[in-house]
Image 1 (tube, rainbow, N blue to C red):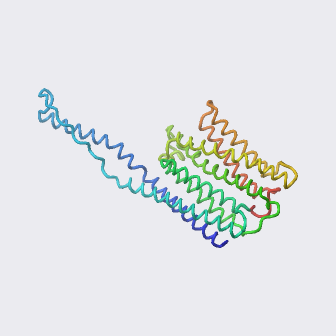
Image 2: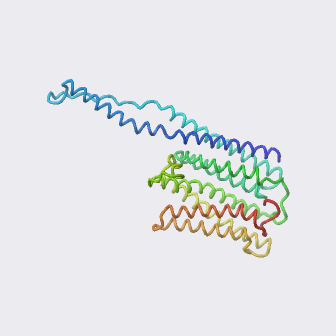
Image 3: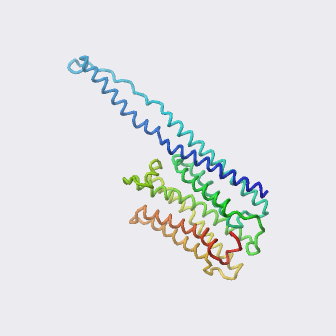
Length: 335
């Protein structure tokens, strides 16, 4: 089971890579269908003007009172790049769904091999968080297909994080240490994992909004030009807020559950352990984002920068604290 799980992770990474390349193809081709639709009225107007000039030259209309029939609507030419872009987008979504299934199968087989929930170390935690993120993305995409082009950035994040987990963070399966062998392990870690996965997804439209908003304001330098074909800034900002507003109460419950577990395991609910400290910092930053977002005088781009800062604190808690600090949440190795 352990070897199967490792192989499934590898296949998932490759499939995420296929999805990312397909999204990049769609992104590069652009929305040719929209360009054709915009150009069509101009072609029709030019055709009408040409017919009118020919009729006037022939003495039709004018003082004679003879009115010419308007020309038939000129259909837009078939744009092959639009079809190719759409096909690439559909392949990207299908590949993302297949990768998510492989990703889930890797987690399930890892849990079966370990005879526990697959959240016992940093490698398993990252795999689970990224799966929650991509599963939530597929739900968002099902509800709002117009956001598909954001998938390029989401799959890029998936490739980077899952590959990092497999190549850098991987550890063999070991039993849980006694401190984690509790029903609070399922309650606390599952809610932390779920909230972190939603925050991960929320960071993607947040960064997309900052780039797209700059592009809509006339900025044409890097990285704003990357957002040329992203959905409208207002749509990305609303998605950012929705995801964070959904994840924050879950994250709050997870922190409270962790304090209750700490009281039962260590005899105190809070001890400013590095992990606890950074969890509190993340909670404060995300609370600050939601407060700023609800304050009319705060600009949306300022509030969104706070959301991005919140995700950076989550990354610090996941990677920085685990690798560079020791505390009660450290159990040896990449845990």
